[in-house]
Image 1 (tube, one colour):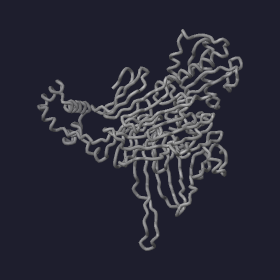
Image 2: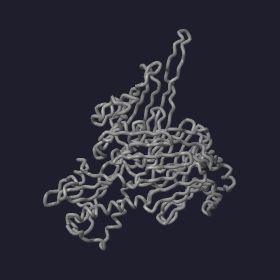
Image 3: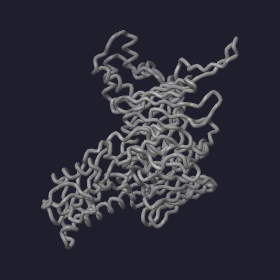
Image 4: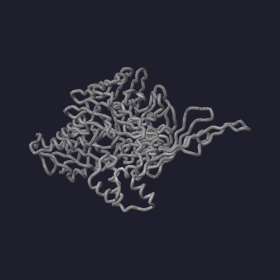
Length: 584
């Protein structure tokens, strides 16, 4: 259901699922589902201050420092504190009594604590980490992780993990072994759009020889198979031999909202023939398409309990009654569904699953990088959604993230960004502030500086004062959507869009890494909306020296875009990762 330009609620059939209440800025302030209630409070600047719930155990309050960074989260049994360095990188996180420190080299690669583990190098060649306190890592010539070996010494030998990618750098085969014996193996299948649509996992079993008494390890011959369904870039369906889980997301985001679980055996009972299919099979004939449509419409009307005058006339011409046709219709079976509401944190990471009675059936706690610290799962539910856009793979421990795989233990991807340096100099990075940073869409807003026309049109560093400054937004492939500039050649005292000289300079800057990307604007639509507001004739003016017009107005455009994003999205001031724009 819709309000004035926004979604006011969701229904499953005729049954209401969720209702939303919004303020005059269209920000969500209340969410209700049965006995479940969530209330959201914002600051005067649009930052998220608190979530309160019908179950007080889920309540959370948020605190920020003078730079607008999230530094504190408080709950009934939860205390989280965060610290950052001057570059905005997370350097420590305290979860209740557990303090974790995070160190990075100048390129943003996670390194071990030098005081506790002085042996590993302080930086990594080509940003390819070769070891940490848990594993040794080996990469191929394309920078893809191909092997990971345990430091830990086990009975029977350490585990070795092997990764194989196809020519599009997608993980297609994984194998975990011990002393040459396979402990687990998996294979992955993708559609033409690069979305993963299936996987097969072979687990191992141990048997002891009857004569020798020695223990042998074998892979099961029959794999566990999982199939996936998509809505664009959002994973909406996960189906195994035993159950199907469907996910409804908060509109316009990667934050899960509703989980619908159905047993596969129950789905099989719902398979039925339509009237047209039944008539054709029993008579061993094939109806023309027009007749199939006619019979389908007739059946739909009978199921609704209403029959049009045209269908009444047609039945009479055939010498049939409504009752006779209804007796031919196979019964409709509605599968039993378990419906849960997702309770997520400010990023969209699921913290709990709440049932129709308002009780929590599953809950978990995580560290800043998405690693599960504690899980309460009395009903053995398979809740695999992690950070926005991520799906947990139990067999590898990795999170599938649309175009790549994310390793939460390292806080980075196992393959390089497919678009190269267009996504940033470090091709493996996840947002270096994962407390508010997410990587769901890969949409980019950047600032470009080019020489003024009298000196040429090449892209330059922003340190050059004699430059023309403008903004550019790109899609997930790194292709330019629009450029926005003030005071360019065509209009010295107003806005311009997609000027050829700007398009040329923008492409050069993106290719060479000279574009300065804004990590505080979550959606390029915010920039377009800000441009529409500012691009009015009455706003045309000159700010003193012509050299500074473009710089002042570009700053004004992006600051307004940031404010619009803060109003549109109920999270604290989010950051979208531009170091891994394809890592979804």
